[in-house]
Length: 527
Image 1 (cartoon, rainbow, N blue to C red):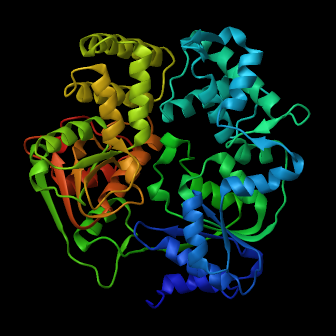
Image 2 (cartoon, rainbow, N blue to C red):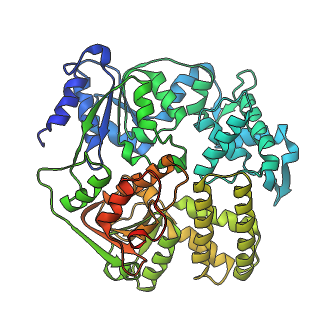
Image 3 (cartoon, helix red, strand yellow):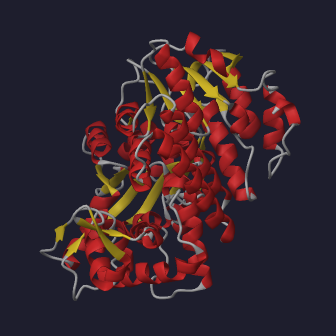
């Protein structure tokens, strides 16, 4: 086993109670990409067990919890946030059962607001103007928004969260009505006197809504702390006396999935944690880390760091040198689809990460009711114009415009290779996947979906799309974080595949991005 580094030993000493006074025990481990943070946290649980008997470790899903449990060998219990929430919730709702996601609030909405629904294909569906109701209910829960007051501020907060998550927000004419209805449904759904069931999201949200706080753990480890939403943060702080949060603020890129962009720092403040560094990257070669340091100056080379390679290629030549096991990353999804088709024509096996992308495309095609691909093109153009108008009317966040354009361009790219709606739907089901098959295919992924992944050879496709647009400094920081994540996925070889003829001057381009709080106008540095 490798000898712990000085930074790791400082963490272990603190967890064992020898590093600093006991009144300041909670820790926030600021860990760079490839630093072995999960391995460090698992080992840290062993040191912490010298002081605590009841230690918990938060995992993002049951499979990870099981794997972590076997690694910790009894020093701590690994569980999901949902199971921790249920442990708080169960005494308040004895005998109530778990229902399918959204069925509880769909039933409540159908009973309370029947005019919002119309019959379609043997079931009741929301009218287009009210289609955001159920997604909004989820947004209000994840963002921990007060459900008892509808104000301009709450409507703005909900709309902004929807924009960031790619949820179509109702037009100005209907938005207040939909927000009010969503909050009313949640009031009913959280009323213990009438509650008959709970759903998966309730397991996280209801404990805080009902004021259920029972610190049944002595210490909780919370990995990927940069990715928690406000409701998850509240739950973590409700179940343990002390905490050790582990994460990288510069890998905060999950705002599109509801995460708090400042989750790491906000959770550190909430738990009154002392910050310690984990700054050595064990994954990336020195040439890649030299680029990453332009954005994140404190990331360090490991003692046995390889040199690695960095090169520029044309985006049109990617298929000629990629092989199974390689990974192609892009800021947007539509260029990935075009690249995937090009590679399939050359008999290269590929997959695009994101099963729900394909599902979302199929749902939109179904909603447009196109009879063939030509009809789809016409209806898709009208749909884009209509949705752009709605976004302009309510001054939507820039991410909402980008998500709409990318979604439409994805459908356009897929339809180029399909001669019918049926074949288009089939392609969506087969091309997009969340399954792991990295050794058998070339994996194409948005950078958002690549966090936590790595490959020997990584291509950043159309890098000029990165940090090119942002509405405000917070959005621009998320773009910088995306670039940092992309730069730190490769273990040996990194390529930039620009669509621009002359490519980009990588170092100068990165320095420009790092030094600014908003994008430069187009035309700089070959972009």
